[in-house]
Structure formats: C-alpha cells, structure tokens
Image 1 (tube, rainbow, N blue to C red):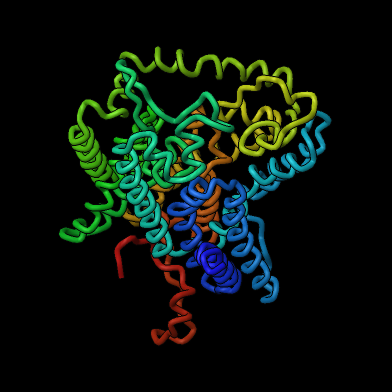
Image 2: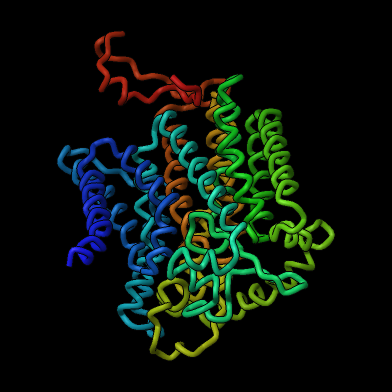
Length: 502
C-alpha cells in the first residue's frame, strides 16, 4: 500500500504544482510575467511531458494555462471599465476563427468529438495574438521575449545533442511517446523517426525538447535572430554570457536530422539580414549572422562526417536542392491543386492533423489524404476561405515588417523587431515540410508575434506618429507630478525603444 502511495506521490505533487501555476496565471496582475511562464513551459516542458508520459491529454495543460492567462486579463479589464478595442489584424483573426467554427458543421466533417478536437488544434493559441498585442508594449518585455526564445532553443539543443549520441533503443526508453515514434509503432507504424546509412546502421533524428522530429531545430530557427539581436544590444564583455546558449542553439541545428530545419534556418537568417539592411542595421546584423555561421560550421566539424544531419545536408547543396525538393515534396505540392478544386469548402476540422487520431468513421475515413504541407492541411480542414485568411495575416505581417521596422528610431529596437519578424518568412517555407499552425513551437510563436508586431508597427505609430525625419520614436509621457514619479507610474510608461539593460 505504501509503495502505491509512493508511486502516486510525484504525480500528485506535479498536479498540485500545476494547479498553483494555473491559479497564479489567472490572478497575477503582471500578465507579462504569466506569459513568460507560459513560454518557458511550452519551450521546456510541453513536448517532453507529452512523450515521456505517452498521454496526448497532457497537452491540455498548455490550453488551461492560455485560458487562465487570457481569462484573468479579460476579467480585470472588464472590472476596470476599460474599453476593449479590436487590434489591427484582429478582424482577420476573428474571421479565421469564425471559419474554423463553421467547418464543424461541414457535411463531410467527421464526428462531433473529433470536430471539437479540430477546432482546438486551430484556435488553441489564437488568444496569444490578443495577449501579445495588449501586454508587450515595453522594450524590456521585448528583450525578455528574445531571451526566452534563446534559452528554450539552447536547452533544446543540448538535449538534441544528447539524443543524437544514443542508440534508438536507448532513446525509446525515455517514455511511451518516444518509443512509439522511434521504433515506429502505434500511430507511427512504418514511419520510425530514425535514419539508416548505407550499411544499415540506424541513428536517431532528435526531437530536442519538442514532441516530434525537428521540433528542437525549429525552436533554434526561432531563437537564432533573437540571439543576434541580443548580442548586438550587449556591449563588450557582456556578450560573453550569450556564448553558452549560442553553442546550445547551433547544436540544435547541427543535430536536427532534418534538411527542412537547415533550409529554414538559412532563409530566416537571410530575411533577418534583409530587414536589418532596410532598417539601417546591415553591418551589425551581417556580423552577427557571420558569427552564427562560424559556430554552426564548428558544430558540424565537431560532430564529424558521421553526423546524420551532415549526411542529409549533402542533398540540399545549391546544385541539388531543386532536385531534392522535387523528389521529396513535389507529389505533396501537386495535391494542392486537386484538393482546392475538389474540396473548396474543405472537409471539416479534425479531418487531418493531430485531431484526426480520433477519426474512425465518416465517408472520408479510408481516403488517403495528403496533409504533409501546411497548404494541403488548411485546404482540407478549412477550405479556401480559411487558407486565404491565414495567408492574408501572413502577408500583412511580412509587409509591415519590410516597410515599417526601418522607421523605428532606435537601432537596437529595430533589430529586436526584425528578430521577431524574420522567422515568419521561414515559417512560410517550413509550411512545405509540414503543418506549422498546429504545432509547437511554430503555432504559439506565430500568433504571439503577430500580436506584438500589430502593436509596435501599427498602433504605436498611430499613438506616437513618426518624427519629422520619418523615424518613429515613442516619447516618454510626461508625469503629472513632474520628475518625482512612483514606481507604478514608471512601469506604466511607454519608454523610448531600446534594448539596452537598465
């Protein structure tokens, strides 16, 4: 009996800790701190807990935290009597949500239970758009966001390296979810997450701290521009503390075991340089990218030619990348036109993607639907209307990044916003490798950064118009009590954009 209680002890303590965290997220008035806790949970624990326990329901924990933060913030705003205005791009976001809900009633939709799961997979992170817009209005919070991205990517990189040194069986011993994916059983029958060389020796394709192949590497792609922006913002010896996380980050890319991560990292880096160049930060961004490239090169050299990622990278050399894409993805891309023609209204949420695991009936249950790209996935789930709305949000964000970041007066703030915007370009490309709007870390990143950029590149310009020279500088609001302001008054002030500590 005592042994049984001993086995339940850790689970009970974990449940209690989670309940306390949820209560804190709901009641805590500093929503930016609650959002930081959520970011660390998503980046460090969500994937590992899902696979180590083997329970898909563990991912409901992240939804509880999102709802707790959003619900608490909304309740406090309503009690204060403040008017809630719709953010820029908010109309497109709400329209996309409406299309997702309507697809629940699609005549071809699967069962109601699966359909509700389908709504969840599309909308679980949408509240982050509104939270990012409302609570990321100070430069110190942007700096903390960049730091969280770097920390999560670096930790995932270290774990990815460890996973790359294990045998498949050793990696499978980490938990039921790992075993299913590595050994190719259950829902992953015939698709083990391993790589075999010409001699038949198999090696792992690491997950990092994510829940599937390449998740750790994608976290590194999101964190790479953030790392460069922080390095540029720090002066002299202060950059030294960023070296350990930089090593972890490049290890995530070098041990990713996936070509898509490497290509996405290159595209994201180039887009970061492009935005920085338009923002008059070309030299510093290029120097940062060069340093990152040297670290990645050093990581590949350290791991040696036997590294799985190095072997797979040979097929995406400049002279081979088109052929490789045609071989690997042409058939999936070709399906897009067929699906758009045959299913313009979609087949209902829960048809494909993570929620489709519960699909066991209906007229499409036995059809071989190809949802290996973001675009096929969206057509099948939400039709042309849903796809069009999500593309409109993407294109609007990209246009804002290219045209308005350069008008921010402070150079380090321009780099910070460029670091947040650049991965959006990479995620578009990543969409050819798989759905991004229903996976971690891509989905929460997309919605949260969309809200952040909506404030800084649209609303802030309206509240604080650009100066005569065309560059936007957000001035400090004058204190009603002169220079003797309280701490609360200083915290509520929108300060001039700057990433320098202090």
